[in-house]
Image 1 (cartoon, rainbow, N blue to C red):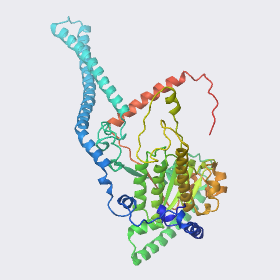
Image 2: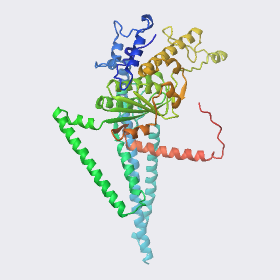
Image 3: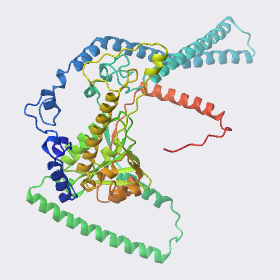
Image 4: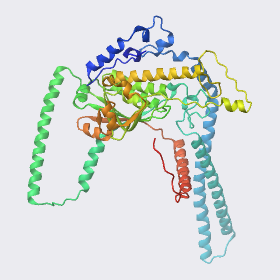
Length: 531
């Protein structure tokens, strides 16, 4: 069974790509026997299948009982979350107040003792008022020490709480509160829509321009103020001003012509200075940064202009679970569907699921020694059945469905179960290969060769057709910064008192780790093997 573009919903606009090769891939998939192809349009699609298609219809996720139970659990835990917030705010506030009171008492006690000491040095005998003043000063200093200790304890407990529940860690009540909803139940992170991801824009062109200006300011002028140098500088300034005037006149004529043609000011600005949206993606096993990627792609699709702007995605990922990375690849497909050129850069690694994402790009750039490929599927499941039998431990596994569990950690593994699991892996691998072949039609003829699970460095991957050009992401960005506005879309970190506590706790932890590691500096590290 082979999968075609309709199965993946890959009806994206191909930019700067071999249309004939793409047609050959689609034609080759359509020529497969009908009994070996999965029907792409069932006669009676179910409601779940309808909701899974990327249409403008409303999602049926709100009717999911698991989501309803998750929301119910959040509603039930909201009073406790508010109580925890109030208690934690009270502790933090008391710590701050104690520190302020301690400082005030130290000043007051010091003044009292200094005044009493001054009177004694002047030779006056200690009166009752001076003795009372000295006693009050001592009491003030004692109270200052007590207030300082109480404030330190409050700050310590706040740091411990922030370290245990760092901000943004998710949880009940939509991740709201000082701990990000630390009291949430096991279903707290099920509804992804409740996490409100904030992003911000950074213009990177300023980075290159400011660096050049700073270099010119500190650069040593070895030629001095010679007459010939001043005359040459005047000629250069005159030529530069004439060139700027000529460009300005051409721009005014072009603007006038576009205004007469009915173009809007916004479109003219974007046409004259296209935008290159920059996204840096760092993926882990379960793709915890999915919400950020979803928001970034949505901004590019809705704000970018087809055929004018481009998206540059720098991918760093060794791969991970199939479904999360399949979703991430589908997110990048949205950019190509919108007609926006998608450029993928790989500086270190894009293997397995990472290359599943990278293959979607119109053009793939990679650093010479970046790891590329690993188009394969793997699973590893330990089984303790013989251990349990040896120690006469009974482990019961109840399933409904013949293949609900094929190979697990406690059940008996049969040849039929292992065969079924291998079939499932082969099906995933086949879908992976078809995905790569559809996204990169040039790999149609040698897809079986490159989809063996092997990985290569980029210079070798280019020979196999997995990479288009050998170039780092920095070099590519510098090559387009003169004609494009490079706008990086990054996640906006929330800064509050809890993040400050967490930062203090992290500094303390790093200091302890550095002290511990210093004890072992004399030891010789064992040799390491790079896989």
